[in-house]
Each structure stands twice: as structure tokens, then as C-alpha cells.
Image (cartoon, rainbow, N blue to C red; front, top):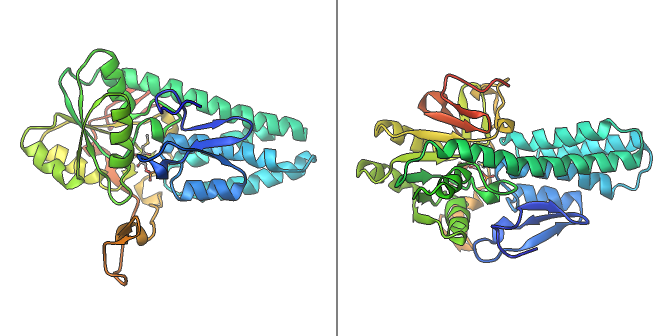
Length: 340
Ligand code: MRU
């Protein structure tokens, strides 16, 4: 493994399941090996691996890991074990649809086999296929989205929808990378993204690694920057797109409302695997996370110990605030949606 995120993947298989521990960034780029399902679930819950497309791969590799760890050579028993592992994986984080999507794809591939060895190989093959596809799809999506950016654009983004949120390349940041590859000069404003700082720890870090032009702001600065004419467009990723709303990191809705108030385009970049058109906003559970994420940072107390805290990890942005959904099949302008 080379210690640069530009040539490495976020999650991969090498005689076992490996991932970059994103909780250690930007201080350290550290790969960790998953030795048990318990370790993988902990890694998903604590955001060592995170971001919707990376979670899709983690879901599938999780099934491959469960298969590898199982001593069973009875195909029926093994498939039952994998179903249970799938339930554990899918319930680790409820909002990003890709996690269930990836686990289900690997479970389906496993179920098509009639020997234990065949099941193990099929689950891993499917996970590897998802990882390969993720990179190719992000690049396609990037090419299509890059046509929406003009030379000199100053682009606001929120959270991390980059290489680290995917197997590689990125969705929202993939669009920016593709535009830069086309020779356009793009300046990124990265919102720090409270409470877990995916914007400052991950987005700013991965853009700087590649020499891309980035300025870090706190999210409450976005409205003021728009008002001063310093932002041309906003692009974010998505964890789930229902028929009426985009679910993404908490704070996304604020930027969308502000973009509309300042007549700026607000784009969402996501692969088709993030679309969940069978559901609407009201059906979806927004993950709520622990109070400690708001009350302390690195052991330093930031709030009174007994304060009541509400910490939703995501919000829903109604589609009428979205200028375009950038996918591998092209850009869809709501109410037009991709045919899935
Ligand atoms: O809680 P996280 O860090 O998993 O949230 C991630 C996001 O909200 C990203 O913006 C989203 O997954 C898009 S990933 C390309």
C-alpha cells in the first residue's frame, strides 16, 4: 500500500478486509485490517469507514468477511449465517441506502451458489465488482458533472463526498477533479461540517494532497460568502435520494436554502445506487448520534455535562431546491428523475 490517498483505495481486500481509518485523518493515513464482524460493525458505527458509496462497498465486503470467517462447510448453514451478518451490517447505520444495497448484492450473489466454497468466492467476487464499479461510475459521473462547471468557478461543498467517501475518486469532489482534469480552474470552499468535521479533516485534507485549491470555512459562513458574491455553485453528495428529497449530512439543507435565496445552482452528485425511489422522505429514518459528539472534542469539554443534546447526522433537502442530480447516466433536473 502506498501512503497516498490518490493511489490508494479507501477499502480493499488483500488476504482479508482492509480500510483506511478515517477517524485518524488528517493526522495519520492508517490502514487497518478487520479481524471480526464485531470490528467491522464498530468501524462503520464510529465512521472509520464512512460516506455512502464506501459504505456500499463495506456492506458487500462485510458479507465476504463473514463468509471467510465462518468455519461452516454446509451451504445452508453458511447462507443463514450470512443473512444474520447482513442484518447486523444493515442496521449499523440506517440512513445511507448504499450500505444495505451493497450487503444485499453480495447476499444475492452468495445465494446463487450451492457449495460453501462457491458461496465464499461469490460473495468476495461481488464485493470486488462493486468496488471496481464504484470507481468507474464516479469517473463517469465526474465527467458529466464537470460540464456544469466553468473555468474560475468557486464551488461550495459540505461534508466529504470525495475519494474517502467512496472506494476512490469521489462524487461531488469527483466532479471537481474531473473539471480540473479538463483544464478548468476550480476553487473549493469546504465547510468544516460539525460535529465530526468531515469537511475540515477529510475534504480539505484530500484536496490538499492533490494540490487542489481549497479554502476551509465554518458552515455558518456560507450565507455570508454567497451574499458577497464569492460562491458560484454548490455541489454536495448524498446518502439517499427518495422520490421527493435528498438525504445528506446535517447542514446540507441550510446551504440549499441559502443557494436558492441567492439564485445559485445547487447540485447533488450521486451514483444510481444512492437512489431509493420506492420511498419518500417520511419513510426514512435519520440517524441520531450520541451527545458526546457535540459536548467534547479530543477529550476537551465544550458543553455542560448535563445539557440535553439533539444530534441528527443527516437532513432532508426537498428536490425543488436541487438544480440537478448528477449521476453516471447524466444530469437529471428535478422533477425529472433517472429511470430506475
Ligand atoms: O456520516 P458520514 O460521514 O458517513 O456522512 C457522509 C455524507 O453525508 C456524505 O456527504 C455522503 O455520504 C455523500 S458520499 C459521496
